[in-house]
Image 1 (spheres, rainbow, N blue to C red):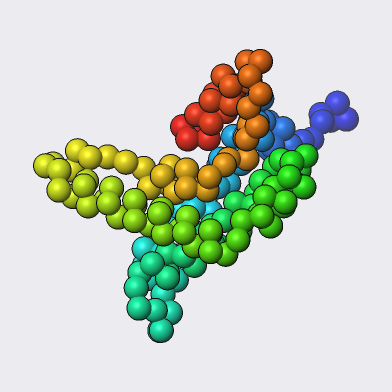
Image 2 (image 1 turned 180 degrees about the vertical axis):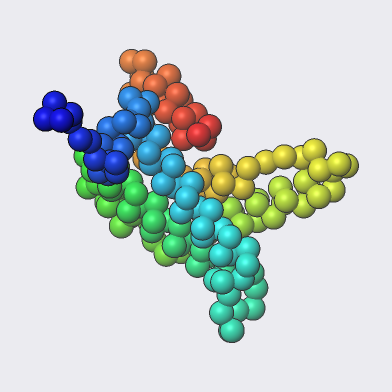
Length: 167
């Protein structure tokens, strides 16, 4: 009886993570997973009218609130997954003014409605587009590979960008 080694029936969180750890889980991949989750939550809230306020005179105001919240969450995710570029991103955020931000929201909102109306007009709903990928593209720059210098980094930038959109 003394030769028998008893093992715990329940694994610790660290043991479970070690068992399921995948070398493909790059910061870009994990960032994309987190962003997807945040996007789904906020866009569902927007779709169900949770960003509307009593004094709103258009859907655009609710969209702006959703987009600002999404932008804030994206910034937090980028700072967490890509801390080496946090100072750069903070300077960029300060440089963009309220008016420019609202203009960017308006362009994204108008384009999103244009694409959704085109999809409805096409027969059998064949005009597919991803709302998530479209809105992600509205941010202007992604956390992955913002600076392209040539020297083969262009291909790396495109590959990482595809990883973000194809998870």
